[in-house]
Image 1: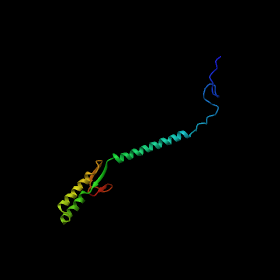
Image 2: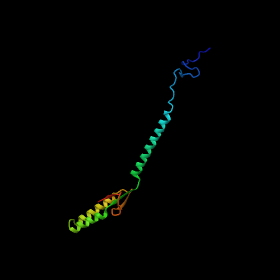
Image 3: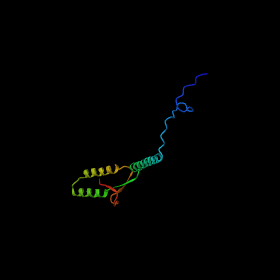
Image 4: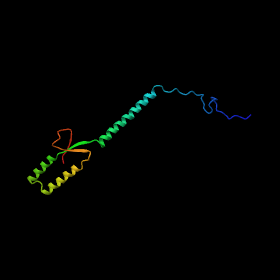
Length: 123
């Protein structure tokens, strides 16, 4: 007779596995609760991040520019002789640059129209 291959000690029906040491019992009740809280935490994090990104980069914002107040000040200074035509043109160019620099996601209103809760830019 030929010699059979050597088997590890333990259960003869499953060669190679040592089942002599008992396995610890599974943790009952803690696994599903821990998984629930992990899923809730991930869901909450993704939701907060999505709302923040939408508000920061995509949502339409309203901003006001106080053009009337700016023009009144320039008119008073020009009539008083405090500024000349060249300085008046330079300030008007600066006003145009300020308005053009406002990003396209902002709706621009005149400062006269706004009552409250809107940021007003004074050029």
